[in-house]
Image (cartoon, rainbow, N blue to C red; front, side, top):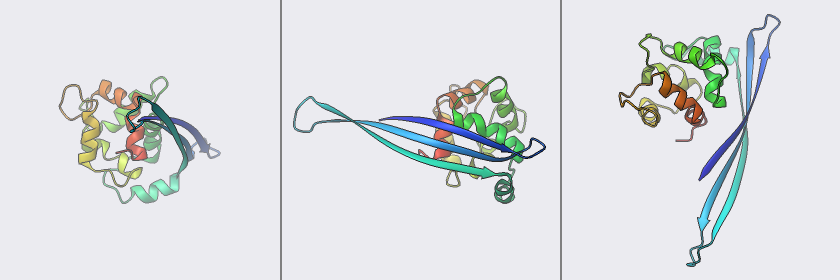
Length: 167
C-alpha cells in the first residue's frame, strides 16, 4: 500500500503580522495492489482518495493548550507544526523547530518533549505510540531523537502520519 499526500497551507495574519489562523487542506491518495485469488498472476491497482481540512486558530489553541501540561506557546507551535505537516522545510525552519521541542537543551528530543506538542493535534496519541514512531528513525536506539533523526522523521512524513493519526 502506498500513501501519498498533497498538503496546502493557508496562513492568516492580523494587522500586526501575527499568525491568527492556520488552515491545512489534505488530499490523501492510497494505492492498493491486489493479486487475483483465482490463481492467475494478475495484479490490480486501486486508488482511493480522501480530502480533509484542519483549521487551528490562536484562540482555539490557547483554550486547548491551557488544559495541557507543558504546552508550547502558539507562536512556537506554529514554527514546529509547519515542517511536521508539510514533510519538508526551508532554511533554518527545522533547526528552529528542533530547538523549540528540545526544551531541556540536551540535544535530543525526548518522548515527553514531543508530547508537549502532539496531543494538541492528536488527542489519542500516547507515549507508547510516540515511542513506536521514534523507533522508526532511531538509529542509535536510545528512544530519543537527535537532530538527524528528527530530520528523518519530518522528511519521511512520519510527523504528518502521527498528526493525521495513521497508526
